[in-house]
Length: 351
Image 1 (cartoon, helix red, strand yellow):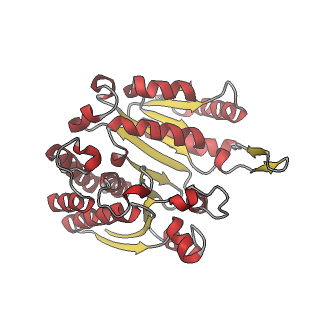
Image 2 (cartoon, one colour):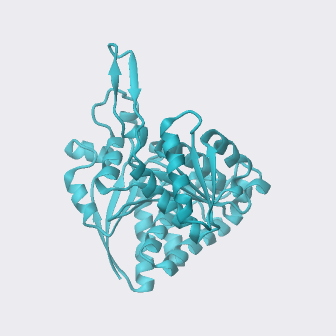
Image 3 (tube, one colour):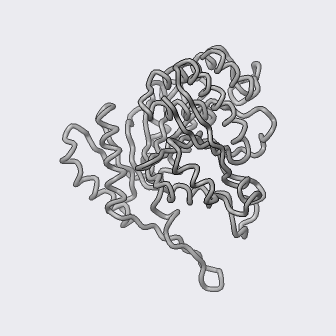
């Protein structure tokens, strides 16, 4: 298969972990007889520095004409520490999601047998955890009207959803649940928020189309609690943008490291694959960032093309590295810590 992949390294450790994912992906392509053409493009603070905006038109052209996008991270301290900055790296991420129609963020959370004791949660609570969040990405409070009034003393951010936006995400949730254990949880705050009541009634109306799926409805605060008490009681969870942003970061620590969790953002035409750990600017250039989440994101990319054996080979290589202790400092636990590049070399060689 010939694949045309847009490569958005972004900021901070983004370029370092992306380099390793490319290395491992190229090893997969060689092993299985595929041809990958990588198309690099600027985004985030790197794009602001170069052309003055975080998601330039040239980058959008590369992305929309690609078969998929492999993305690193966005964010830089000089913008984080300046609330008055008129242009910010994160604006590029929101613009990209909207422009590419990336409406569903798929965030799996699972455990690794060799790392069960590295999680901040007890082994007996997390063993067997294998859940997936579907977070709506292009609506809600992040995209609603926002501003200041009363001479800047009052701020507002409006949360707005349409029934159609809820339906298209819920449809993906129901379909995913049908391929798994046929359990779906709708996460909302319907006791307080009108948008959540729209979410709940919309999903309830769709239940009849998926009679085999058992649907539960839980408030977001209850889910936040249960995620650290009984995470393996969940399978597929659907939720709006802000709730999903928070809950998926909470869930990510179950595995023992944010450096292990991949994600995908799905659209009608093109999909984007990225690690969840952010730009981690303090580690930039130090060769200590964990590239495994980016490698596993690339595995999700291959699987999205129907190349399941290729994705499995990447996952197997990561599991072997973890078992062999070929890990970066976040997982070394006092033992030998390998560099970002060394881990990437090891994974590619073992493939």
